[in-house]
Image (cartoon, rainbow, N blue to C red; front, side, top):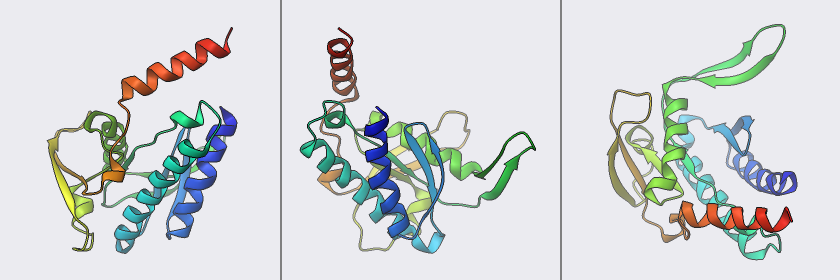
Length: 180
């Protein structure tokens, strides 16, 4: 599992840096990255590269786990508080703010809507007009009181090709086989 994550992080984090973003932290099997607001289109293109890279990994891997690696990307825009937070026992560089929570909730929502990349209206306003979007309606994210209008790209590459249930069932099957 660690090798699978390292392969995913190796590709994904390199894409973030290449696109002009910064990595704030690794979060288990995910990560938090941020881009300056004038790089919103670069952030979206980076998300597409990450998703395409995941597809290449799935298609070329002989590992049963890597063949089931899917990720979701949630994008939002707005003010954040960034810097070292903690105490003398543990200090960590992080980002804080409503926009961070919204992006995290959007990432979680990707599995429900069936698209690997979703973003809210706050992020959409900073994108170039050359991108084509599909409105996905609105949602009130967990822990929020305000509705977010959400979108995805008009690009077949951003659709999940397996349902979350199919992925989970396949992983459970592999785990059962490897635990014997």
